[in-house]
Length: 352
Image (cartoon, one colour):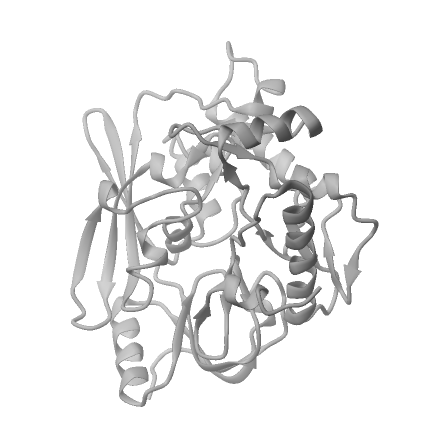
């Protein structure tokens, strides 16, 4: 039925960075657009659920998946030189961090602030990844999506992608009937460093280079963040909350919480600092725990189940709401037996 590598009733533990040990009815590694189209057609023909994954770096599997998991390995990078810009056409199965390194080696600068972010190119667009003052939307030119109904490829201009904090149109409207095939990234030939927040403590503006910023950010992330290959995690489990200025001012003055003014007048505050101020004492549910230094990150210390992770998340969410009147919204996708489930629907059912 399939002409690509596939696995039956196999564990997804090594294919999701949270390392939740669940299985899928079938796992297929997809390397071409043609293979993706053929596989999805067969799934639809036999009414089998399917899920497209890249690195599995932003998901929590709630239980065994009853359908086919398609692992996107559609790769390729095409670079076009313009007078003032470089245009990179990057296929969605490429690793994001590999792209950052690749461009630096070619002396094409502008992605260095996004070094060491896990995941593939497709998820970078879906999540609008960001770090150290730069987001994917800042470098995106377009996103190419494949209709899984008529198999036509549509190019969506950056301005139509509805990028926002850790979100885009691809998390909603283009979630099920479309697959991201490639993205266009536009980088200026005139490089201007993005020096944000903590980077100011490490960078000398007079002699900084993109390579220096890349190396510093890699060191910071390696030191601060848990390596998914050693400790299961999906990065920040919750988003940093964005609240009105009046409420933010009160919390900032009372608890000295880091904050980031937004263009719309609202204030983004540190969710990790809120959790820190709740002063959980080595709280752990089974093997699910809060990371020691990055409190927004929940970790799988060894063999945590999704139920343990969810229970821990609910305890945190309830504490923050009660103490600060701030709601922590999950950032990661929850995957049920046949597809994505609204995380809020899952957490609302949990009693603490």
